[in-house]
Image (tube, rainbow, N blue to C red; front, side):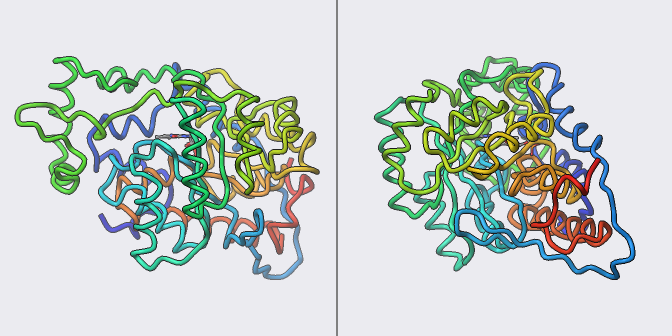
Length: 381
Ligand SMILES: Cc1cc2nc3c(=O)[nH]c(=O)nc-3n(C[C@H](O)[C@H](O)[C@H](O)COP(=O)(O)O)c2cc1C
């Protein structure tokens, strides 16, 4: 589809639903249990009013921010997401290229479906210049595995490392279960038939994905990476691991999945440079607080000594402004860019970034705020 026809994230969501097999759309769109936390992430933004200042003329705001020495054209990063390779042939390389072309940072998930070497090579071969990428670590295999991975991504030039702490088990994603998509990717005969039907109903997607990602065993439903969701947890990270990772990784280190002041303080005490306030987009513990509920206490506790980022529920540029006003240095988006990718590949991700940037520009102009760096709690109520 022509991505310029997308006017907002919700448009991209609807286009994604039409573009890919139901199981893949639901994998992105769904959350855990009753999806309360997922919905609350969005709702919490909408409860925060923006307070404009008048009489300042036409403000042309500056959106650029610096994170760990890297300048971002605007304060939105692409969050680490698993199985991006199954969503569109452009996959994780396309996502990284889109971020590079728009002057922002993308965070590659350890379970994105392509090795970090392929992604950096793919970005370079496209001649994309932009910010260095970050890498998000999972290590189901334990310490030996993460030590090797930390060294690999350091050698590849990934500039910051994100350790996701909230995947101590995989959340109960009932849409995935109904679609026959389980953590271990066990497909029973009933769900295999269902998945085969879903793929057949999206011939464009099936043709484009081709043999590379669809295990096109004659007569069999797609298996493996197509809709494969590994139990990324395996051996979850502990604070001891974070301390050990700190000694091995010399660049900026962030922990993701933080919702309390105490955990944020602990991360900073261990030498982390930043925390990402996140509930995994409501995909893990349903009932966990919305990230905008958790953000103020984390900012108030560690904001003076560490970089605080937030994700979950950001759907508009005005949400970015709200998060920065509370005290985040930047935000990450997950589903918004995945919808764009499913709908229109790399160009769809770029379109989502363009929409959010234009939104944010307009929001600051209407607020009368000349620079994202000036946003603070006096701009919201
Ligand atoms: C399909 C999907 C896969 C995800 N996979 C990962 C992952 O591999 N690692 C991780 O740290 N977070 C993962 N997340 C969580 C995102 O990084 C991010 O926290 C979340 O999507 C933010 O919420 P939003 O989707 O409302 O923007 C995933 C999210 C989605 C939607």
